[in-house]
Length: 534
Image (cartoon, rainbow, N blue to C red; front, side, top):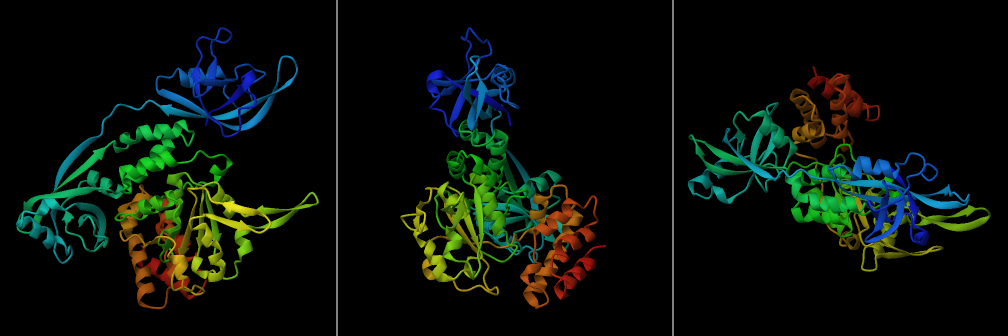
């Protein structure tokens, strides 16, 4: 990211501080420097962008470069800067003067491409035995009510092959489809794999089929450019990074109102921005609202509770929510021997003096971050109850030796739990009642999830991964050979990402079987992989 050196105006030296955000404008009336760039706080000039060799700090752009590369660029609509650190330079008098290093954020000129809707018609068929909701659609057609329901399209693995299937919008089960698109073109397959494709039933076709119309909005992120630009002007993030977040929110079914609210509430961070997750593979759900719901609760500072089996995606869900919200994340691993002091911090000795060092958990809550306490149902109830004051109206806690710790209005606590595991216990009813609970289940349409996570993966390799995963999950459900520890999503993604250099069978052994402790379970998974991989 571009950086500049800022020289305060003579009467404004004491008004500039690390974290201040300013706008940069050309000063064409400056008789001393034709490349002058003014640093503005609203309508008041507070500094200049350095433009002489003795004032420019290393690895920063001078005012002339700022003008030529950005301010004079017709593709640049505006420039903001945030002070990151203090520096010094020698004035012509020999005196040492204060300067500042600032990070520059660029607001681009957006192409005036209006969002457009393209509608295509497709035939839907398939046996009712395989698509058990198809007769329901045909019944609605007979009653002239088919246009009153919304349908969605999802990928489904049928007999080892991927198919584009039609579902009622509120149907979460992968097997309850209402038919499959006949000879779906690659363009539709790609669109469905990205998610968020809706359709409407328009008429019947043949004795047991019907036709749907699929509408896809192009350039749907255009409507959010004003909110993106406002966030860039606050030095939240560069425009391409924010566009990527918006694209994922659109794909995940966020409402326009929630997307706007997220962009307007995303904080401007300092050093703590290093703790904001940037997931390589964001959380994806082919049907459902887990991500949007979690973001809505976190944005309001609610105590959020996630429950689900290992490998269901709880951690990825929270990391993705923090990435979208631009919030720092702190994790605390729950256990039966954790104490109140582990939450709060500890006394330290420095230069012969003792002081209390607040825990990373509480520091994160003070700055508006998100704290995740994993395996919360392994923590003793009397210890967990010490945190209750953080989740009531006071949103604060008294720490012995430190004082009152107040949560930022947007800070959030998240509890995750796996139920039925060794060492876990029943949650205290008073704790559970303090916030919403979202049940996170493993993505039913694994083929679509893997295609989304690894766009370069071949369908036949994805099918193999699905067969292996299905066999493992069947063993977990039906016998005692395998435990939920054998369930993974990350392992299949890692294997598919390296399949060009490492054969899929070997990759699955490395990333799925051998991650388990050596013994019967690892051997059983290895046998499943060898049976399904050529």
